Length: 134
Image 1 (spheres, helix red, strand yellow):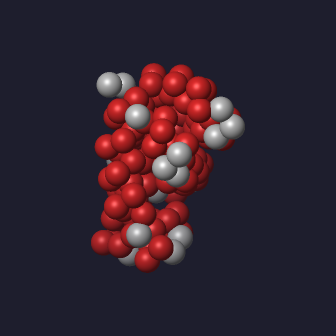
Image 2 (cartoon, one colour):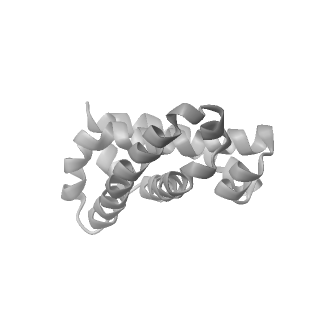
Image 3 (cartoon, helix red, strand yellow):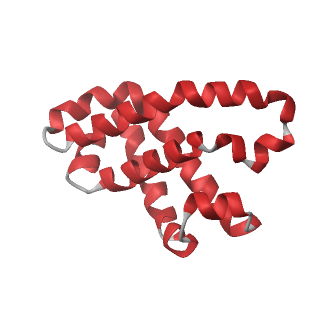
């Protein structure tokens, strides 16, 4: 079911958008106001972000490859938690941009009004993505 959602129902669009957002978030982690609040952990979190970055690029490639062959989506069942993390990160940053109006989140999310329209799609995607592991 998850593969059908991604390919045939257009779920790949929000997943790719979330992965690209996650990639951007990881690249700018040092500028995050949250990181400044936990300064002692900053080096560790920055290091972890740089380790995660290649995985995001790999996942973007997997999704793009799956658009040509739905069977390749069957390999995504082991990546469900990573996709959920990317979707949740995007969702959370949309809320932070809207609620805090902090320049970091506004710049990260871009057009907040447009991003808010993605919230419903993110919820659907989080639901459907779980069907990979069922």
